[in-house]
Amino acid sequence: MDFELTEEQKLFKEAVRGFVEREVVPVVDESEEKETCPVELFPKLGELGYLCPAYPPEYGGGGLGKIGDCILIEELARVCSGIAAGIMVQSGLTTFPILKYGTEEQKQRLLVPAIKGKKIAAYGLTEANAGSDAAAIETTAKRDGNYYIVNGSKIYITNGQICDIATISVSTDKSKGARGISTLVIERDTPGFSVSKMRKLGHHSAATGELVFEDCRVPAENLIGEEGSGFRYMLESLNGARISHSARSLGLSQAAFDASLSYAKERKQFGQPIGSFQAISFKLAEMFTRLEATRWLLYRVAWLYDQGAECRLEAPMTKFSSSETAIWMAEQAMRIHAGAGYLAESVIQRYFRDAIMYHTTEGTTEIQQLVISRGLGL
Ligand SMILES: Cc1cc2nc3c(=O)[nH]c(=O)nc-3n(C[C@H](O)[C@H](O)[C@H](O)COP(=O)(O)OP(=O)(O)OC[C@H]3O[C@@H](n4cnc5c(N)ncnc54)[C@H](O)[C@@H]3O)c2cc1C
Image 1 (cartoon, protein in one colour):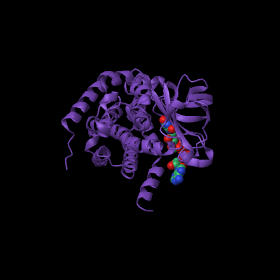
Image 2 (cartoon, protein in one colour; image 1 turned 90 degrees about the vertical axis):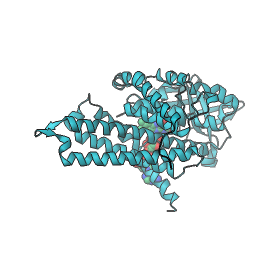
Image 3 (tube, protein in one colour; image 1 turned 90 degrees about the horizontal axis):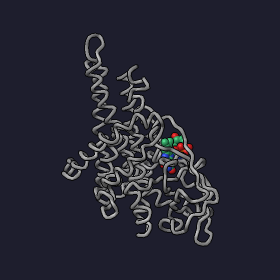
Image 4 (cartoon, protein in one colour; image 1 turned 180 degrees about the vertical axis):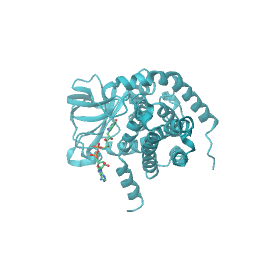
């Protein structure tokens, strides 16, 4: 058993931290305030080979596996979960099906520019009537010669209104249910494809949008893998993405803990630092313990994934544990900061607004519990 990052992983973590300090910290406040995603970060990360650290170097990736991806996302989320959201979708969820099931031609045309940050990618699964019940999607793709004619819409899509390409789940054969779902990559300039912004409580620096397809003619060469296998690809993509999502929750938890610990040492009431009151010091002791437990479950699962394990039980476990921990941590940070945390200029209220969303994305907490309990034979 070795709980240390390798030298290569440590160097990567240091390099990413440097990048975050230099390039991300200065743009967080404005991006959050204006509710815009700093899109320039995609090519900046891409040029350095940091945007998709898990992917093979021959396509522009870092060759650092899921652990590399988790390091990137954790470091970004320590500073801004909203910015981490857009990068996370790009570094795994949306590009994964192309990497795993795309042809070499698709990889060169669609994946390589995404890994380099030259094309921003979105992942479109959720619809108005298909959230947790992903097999209920209603967006259709009907074959017409060398094209698919796509009709329908996708909601809550991260990178939605800034995407150049979108990896979309569509129904190519309604009569087959989940076995009639396929994966198409739709390019932004395809006639009939439009996007609009969706505003939200938190994650203001993540671009969240609705994607609408009206008689959208998509070349058949943009079908990923086999027709009818899209639901399986989606489950596989989401499973890996749940591990990266956990790194995002961990980054926010770390930030909430760090801010709370220093505030507890600085803030004085009744003539002493509030950290000297047991009510506060016990909270911090519990926060630190839960933070460490979350970290080691996550990195163990990422390691297992890199060894080739499917992690069908472990990925939902780390997603469930890390997101609920982050929500709890943000609330504790709010209690420790009290009035100071509630002010608009405080990062604590941002952590609080951002953390609550972790319950929902990449499958809700209840869906993770469902998958885990099924894995236990219940
Ligand atoms: C900010 C943001 C970004 C997002 N980004 C993307 C994206 O990039 N791409 C994308 O495709 N989607 C995205 N989503 C959508 C997200 O994946 C869905 O919101 C999520 O899957 C839940 O679906 P829903 O919101 O429709 O909730 P519902 O499925 O309607 O669930 C409502 C409630 O019922 C519970 N529930 C549902 N079914 C069961 C069950 N069988 N057992 C127990 N409880 C159940 C849920 O846990 C939840 O508490 C995003 C969402 C948000 C908020």
